[in-house]
Picture 1 (cartoon, rainbow, N blue to C red):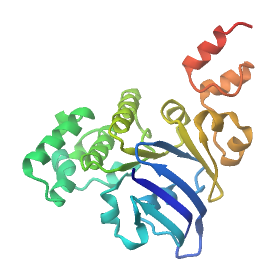
Picture 2 (picture 1 turned 180 degrees about the horizontal axis):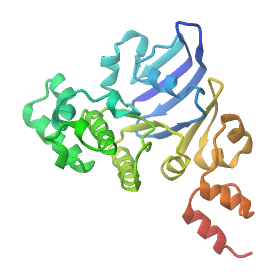
Picture 3 (picture 1 turned 60 degrees about the vertical axis):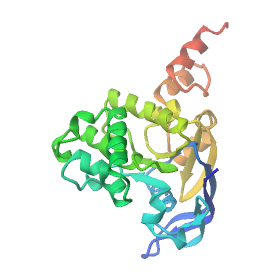
Length: 268
């Protein structure tokens, strides 16, 4: 099974700023992993090392047995697709269809396969009605799904979602949750960096907490959100329902409304 492996990986920018310090982790194909922590913790730099946008200054990062130092970003992108937080940083084609089909054409897929794949991902992400439109003339939340489709269509081994719920409405968040199930069924690994703890608690079993350029915890979502020390160091908060449960004396391990109700029903 393909993996992303960090072996004592650090990254220092040309100005001398150290963004990541001695990261060690393994992410298996098909896993869902959320990386959390305050701004400046090193999350974005870490995921950019996963697809070759950054090469480690020391240590190594392996993607599907490839040392990223020895390959171009374009070569690594076949295994790890990156969906930017702001879709306007990613989109550059004149129609939604041409944006989604750009990489399959670059890889010289047969035209029939390109058309079939574009239709499938557009239908799944509920954007098929926009295929002939200019992506900059459609709503921002829809543009975010265009960028996801443009990466998903290439069928990478892993996909990175940078703040996927930012600017999304409830419908969009529901589609994102369905997307995660879709990817898991197809053994496509998902790595997300996000400040949306509700999204993390509802959709991710494994959570990596970062602070001060390092990984400080790699545990289940329940363990992360139950640990006051980790929350304090990474400067993240419990979910709203988790905070309410704690205030009511129901414990620190409740992640969502369903668990909250179940805890209330337990005999005293």
